[in-house]
Amino acid sequence: MAELVIAADINEEHLQAVDGAFEAVKHAIRCGELLIQQKQAMGATQGRQGKNDARGTFSSWVKEHCNFSYRQAARYMQAYRDRDAILAAGHDSLRKALQLPGAGGGACVRLPFSLAHARKIAAGEKTQTSRRRPTNAVVGEDVALAVTSCATLRIVRIESKRLGDFTEEDAQREGGYTLPEFRCAWVDMHGSWDTNQEVEVVHFTCEESQL
Image 1 (tube, one colour):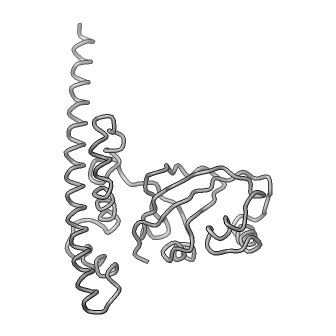
Image 2: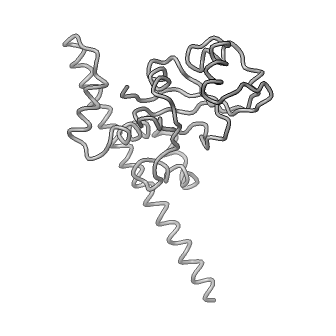
Image 3: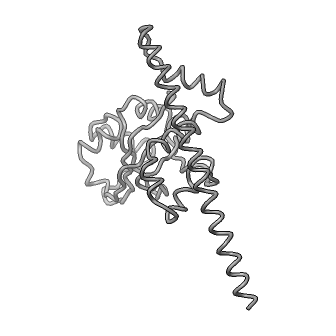
């Protein structure tokens, strides 16, 4: 009997946790909506004034007026963009809910990049990264640039590939390289080019950047 009482208490606390998480998610979505409204308003003002540095100005605005980082603001805005899928998922999306900003899930995965590669990501020249070890990245979720935490990447695809199977298209996505240039860059970073080595190839889009 005591075990049944304890189990009932555990299940009740679980339901309260889920409900609390979804309330937090709703606040996160609303915060993202307001941030996007402010960003759009500032962009429109900049456009009328003939300027195109709205992203930097909005970043400064967040730093001056909000009690959280620009990275956190980017996650709130992404929550708003994904609001329909998030809210339609129901209680089964507890894991997803707890990973959203403000819902107790902590920081997203961080991927290290050189500053040169971070700049290529911001410029849209790098949309793929290859790693010798698993990154723990998940398709559909966000990762942060560990070099400066100045950008948020959305993972769109992950695959395993032999270095010997890399193509010119892969090299281009790695940062605008030709295949011979990418081989040289890999050797500079890792010491050798083993055509039989399996690597994790992560494809992404840059959602937000302050570079």
